[in-house]
Length: 333
Image 1 (spheres, rainbow, N blue to C red):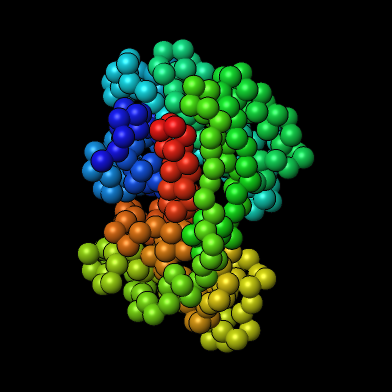
Image 2: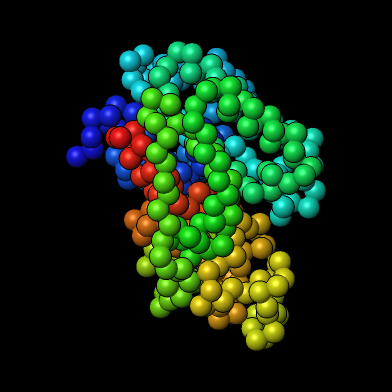
């Protein structure tokens, strides 16, 4: 049974995606009151996996501050305490995006996220804020944007904890660096300690002994896929799969991951899904989900390409669980 303080803290999740970040708070007994994203397949996935079906499809740019506040008023009472979590779209900051630049319009979503929070803070009692983004956000070309983000956080007069975290240190079999900024209401003090795992998990730990997946074909539905509804992948049509020993971990389009190391970052284009350690095919969606740390019970909905996007964009659930647990302890104290 959650303690009373945590039970009264309701989560508002912006840019929620499939719910990787939400999942950690859900598992730590917070109530997911409202989740917003503009990707319809992700909203369907979110509502399929979370019992209270809090997710709605909406464009935060179109909603603006007024629209977001109206949605919150529908789900939250004035005397409720809330926590706000979100990872604004990161393609404009990603080092994997060779065309990223400081003027990418998507970069403004991170600023809008904080502008909306500032307005929310005037009407509701915010216990904490979580901001997640790629480590490229701190690159030199994004200095102005990052400085503005930090300035806006400080203007809220919360206790700020800014960390570059690698998911591999938090029970995720994947090398995935992200910037996590946590802002705690000062009435909760300054306690905020993330518990790192003692062991590094590998690809072998996550997906060893899985049966072969089904290959994508037109008309194939999740109910037709044995083992797990997301255990499907693309047909290995390239001749490169006929010589798996020649595939290496250094390329982009045919990066073969290694059994006894953590996976490289799960962030794929449709033709860039990492190659299975055996070298004869690409990973299945479900294998990628397990490398992200999603539980076996979780299912992604949508087309194959929509599932690729969802698993790539997600915050690894074990990492979100650690963040949520640290915040819960802070609130309780």
